[in-house]
Image 1 (cartoon, rainbow over the protein chains, first blue to last red):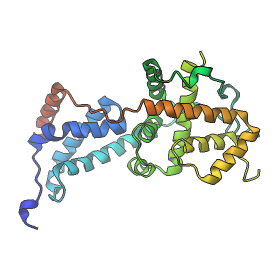
Image 2 (cartoon, rainbow over the protein chains, first blue to last red):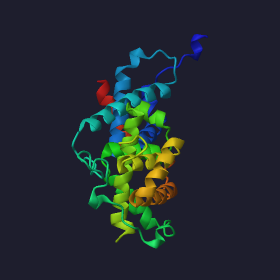
Image 3 (tube, chains in turn orange, brown):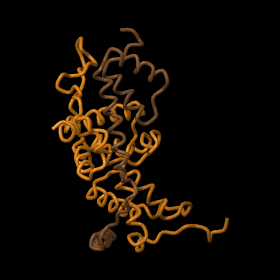
Length: 189
Length: 84
């Protein structure tokens, strides 16, 4: 390989060339636009700082994405450690002789008979989106990546540094909460 | 507690996994068995399927968003300051 094929960095062009790409990459994983912008900005700062370590093996964009990934994991760790804050409501008893049984007021209610038919309205989509937004941040994040963006389980686990059983517990809690929210706000009024 | 018997918590977890095609055959059989004695989880499963259809209809993963010119200008300014 000749030295010509080596990639170079040109920070003055980063914003024009990569800002939107990095922003889209982030927003599909973080889903909050303010947070996404901050993470992109931090990535550029970190890139400037680490320029001397760039070996030219990867393209500029690949190199920036690698930095961004670290930033996203750090962000995820941060929200993950905000324990107790906005914890998901329990749906099942978690100890005693009723362990694993439905908690009475969380038991699913029968939905109206048109629940099957009337699922295309815009209003319904808005209710659904609002219910997803009500999930605690880390639940919403994992749930959206899995459900709305079709990421592989392995990919999510790797990116967010969680185990697959951890992932399914989060999906389970998110879905039971989402079901309850849709029931309260849409299906049983 | 027999290994074959599921709690409602476990049953609904399997149901949630199956929405993504990730439940094993054994798990599905256990779930079906659980339904025989538990109408609540059967109802949950039915509603969960409706929810999945609904979520599928509202998938919007491909929207391309971009930052505004003002936001980019601010970012550029921040970078200049950072360099100094």
